[in-house]
Amino acid sequence: MLHDTPHRIDETVADLNARYRHHGATAVLEKALAEHALGRIAMVSSFGAESVVLLHLVSVIDRTTPVLFVDTEMLFPETLAYQQDLTQRLRFTDMRTIKARPEALAEHDPENLLHRSNTDLCCAIRKTEPLQRALSGFDSWITGRKRYQGKTRAALEFFENEDDLRIKINPLAHWTSADLQDYIAENRLPRHPLVAQGYPSIGCAPCTSKVEAGEDPRAGRWRDSDKEECGIHFVNGKMVRGKPADA
Image (cartoon, rainbow, N blue to C red):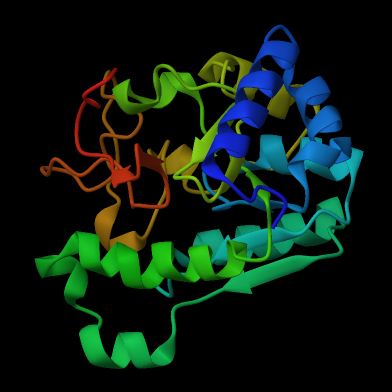
């Protein structure tokens, strides 16, 4: 791997954030995809409510960028159809669908009911482990996280050290919800069909509910629990639970 020590990752991240602090999303992506220091890069997309913006930006710059899509096998049918539609429209040439290991599901969730009793383990088996396995061949990855999405992301930078493993690139960190909607409209991009039905943030079907006016956009994710992240994203190497201690 290119980033062979935690110290080197920290240095690279600090340097990149200093250099690109005042750049926009397109410039950050263009630099990132051409930046030798970032090594092998993949994009990870949930093909959720706002995913089309980053997918479109990447497709314009380099359609050969590997795109990793984690199919938990509990997604809404609309999400699966949307993923296929966008892949064709944006003409990505290296789309990779990632799934849980069958033996892990057989051992821990043979009846597909684990989400009712242990959401963390369910996410670990169906999302976190498969994605980490898929990312093992990459030095950096592009995410669609934004600061406005909640208190756990309020201080998000363009570049992050992911638990001393690789670098995360967050080109849309400073974008607002209005910015995203404007971009979608200006570029005439297709929206996820569930957005119009009251789902501003879309995950797995059993753990995603509609959001009422005035609620946080992610309020429908794991409603009535303190869970805020699936585990794909960490703070100081730990799954996010409420406000980070150093926030």
